[in-house]
Image (tube, rainbow, N blue to C red; front, side, top):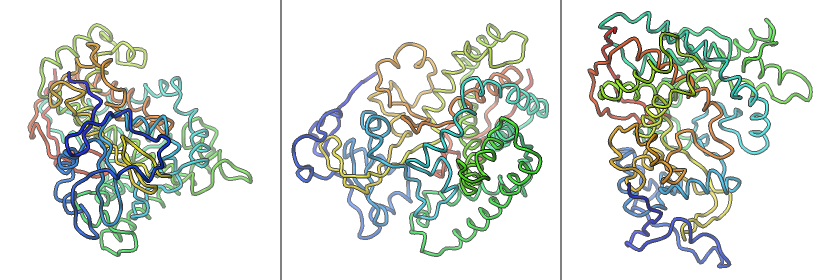
Length: 470
C-alpha cells in the first residue's frame, strides 16, 4: 500500500494535507484553490452532466483541494482523508449540511437529515434511544424472518433483479422493525415505491435540470412535486392511524408521535412527517444498494463465498443466523465493508462553509459547497493496494491500521454520522448469512455495471443473478 498525505497544487508542488491551514496571516492572503476551467454562468455543469464520475478524474489532476462551479454555485472538492476529517469531525461546527434543498430537492426539509443546529440536536436526542446497540439487536429476529421469507419464495434457478429484490426486502424490514408497519413494495401503486423512483430521478446528476434553481420551471419538477405530495399524504395517513390506535410502542413511529402533538412538544407536526418521509426512503435505499453490490461481487468470487460459508459453518452451524452470531462473523463483516468501499451507497457528502476557512493553504470562501466524494477516496491508490480489486482480507490483515481514518467513510462521520449505521450493518450481515447458506450465485449481468448518479450509487440497469438452491 502507498500511504501518503501530500497533495499537489496543480503545478506539481507538494502541499502537506495536514498543514497550510489558518495561521496569523490574514485569510485574504491565501490563494483560491485551483480547478478546471468552465463556461460563463454554467461553469463546469456540462462536464458534470456528461460524465459525473469521470469529471473527478479531471478534478483530481488539480490536487486534493479543487475548486469548480455549476450554474453559479461554487464547489470545492476535498480529496484527502485529512481534509474530510476536518470538515466532518474536528471543525464540523464551521460547516453545515447541504442537500440541494434550494434547488427543489426537498425530501424532508424539517427532518433529521436536512436539519442543522439546535433543531438537529433536538431531533437526534428524541430518536437516539431507538438506535442503541441493545435496541438494534432486538430487530434481528424481524430481519432474519424476512430474509427467510424471501429465500423461501425463490425457487431453484430463479433469476432475480438483485437491486429490486433487495429494495423490497429492506423496505419490508425497515417498515416492520422501525415503524411497526406492513408495506407492500411489490405494488407500483405503493406511494413509498413511487416516491423512491421520483427522488432518484429528480437527483440524477446526468440532467442539467437537477442543478437549476427551484424557480426555473420544468415538467420534471412538477412530476416530482405531485409524487411527493402523494407520498406525504400517505405518511400523514400512517401518522393518523398510529395516533388512533395508540402510540405506546417503542418503535420509531410511536416515539415520533409521542414527541409531538401537545403544547411545548419536542417535535412539530412537520418534523414528525418529514422524519417519516426521510426514514422510509433513505433507511431502505442505502442498504439495498449495498446488498446489491455485495451479491454482485460474491457472484464473481467463489473463493470468497467458500471462506464466508466456512465461517458460517463454524459460527452458526445449523442454527438460524441471529444477533448473537453477528459479532463473530468477522469475515462477512469484511466482505460487506469491502463491497461498500468499492461501491459506497452514499457516494458523496456535501457541506457548506459557514465562514471563510483555509484548507491545505487555500482559501475556501464562506458559502462554498464542499464535496467529499467517498467513491473517489475509497479507490485512491495512495490508501489502498489494487483499489479496483475486491479484497475482503484488506480489512482483516491489519493493513487498515496504516490508512487515515477517513480513507473509508460510507456512513459519514463525526456528530452527524448515520444514525442507522448499526441497524444497516446488522441487517446486511443477517441477509448475507441467510441467503448464502441457501443459494449459489450465477451473475447474468455486466460484472462492472454502469452507475446511476442519483441520491445513491445504484446501478443504472438491473443486476440479474440466477439463484441455485444448495
